[in-house]
Image 1 (cartoon, helix red, strand yellow):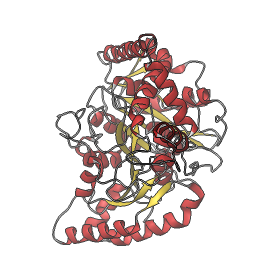
Image 2: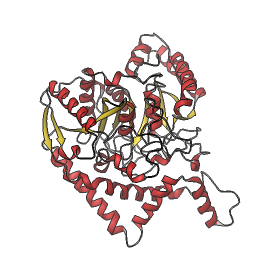
Image 3: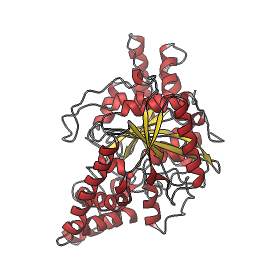
Image 4: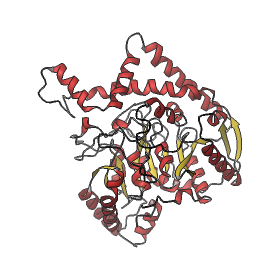
Length: 483
């Protein structure tokens, strides 16, 4: 049963081939047996999962149906879950039990999903390797000596290892798409505002966006359907109708205009990945797509702009964790200043402290105009490049990452080297565009992803292209040895 996709689970439950409770027990046993190798979960919620599975079976027995009714998933551990630890991968929130459910959690629960647990992640979503978690690094099921990508590495590793069919994740600079590429999954970052951020603990509020991680585009469509929609609790949520994503998967790609930016194929890209991307392009051409070279001239400025804006917003968002109201508090503080300093110094890890310091510096008097304001101007130029490109093409295609997954610890002494791995993904967050990564092959036994970008609210178009590609390739069906 663990090899079933979300779509296959929905059909199996509808045909009464198995119950949600039976499936849930199988997957919980599998997580208990195999996750010690991966460290992909922070918390398991066995009692809740079995309760939800029994409730889903009862709803089906009463005549209800739905693609997510009885489907087992897990949540990245920055989505608040009432009465369950929500740690953000940090010592700071190790003792925090959220008093309410995030909108994504409550929407999916209402649709009938079964929550198996909370997945490991880079601390406060800051990282590209899932090595900054206070609960230890997550390992890539394709090679346990390599990283699974970050910050949603726990969700990615769990789904790739067939511990569950799908999981929620978040993407601030590529944190859904990059782990998807590193673990042979399909991952979708929706348009900014498409999925509510209410109850999603913030890293950088103007960049964060929740989305699905699964094995296929069809499964991403099913999970996104349950996650998306307007939320009055979230001031950045967009009141835009949510289409039926699954219904749009089978559209023809005949005449689809695909733009390939020349900037994507520079010296930093592994030539073996470049070859796999070209193979993907040929596959899409066979399906009727038309390829056109385009230019995104301001892409080169995206990383420095992102690493000013994101830490600036993080320094503001994380100021609330001060040892006073919730989270870690130091022992026997001498005074208020000592309470603040030691609680934050003990509660935050090195990468989080580094980004808070960078952000506070960029926002400080005398440097705001020189750094933060300039970065926001570059952000506008990046968006303008995309708007000009989408006047000529329907989607943009390129690599998700410049290299396959690196070895655990390989970039720990050089944070900038890890930052540069986000070069292809960051621009979508700066512009607020939807982006998808799908499996495209292997280099040295490690998965590689191809990235698709589309205009605002065109998630359906990305899912359609990915689904058609997956009907004609089998990369997404490959399973890591031992799982």
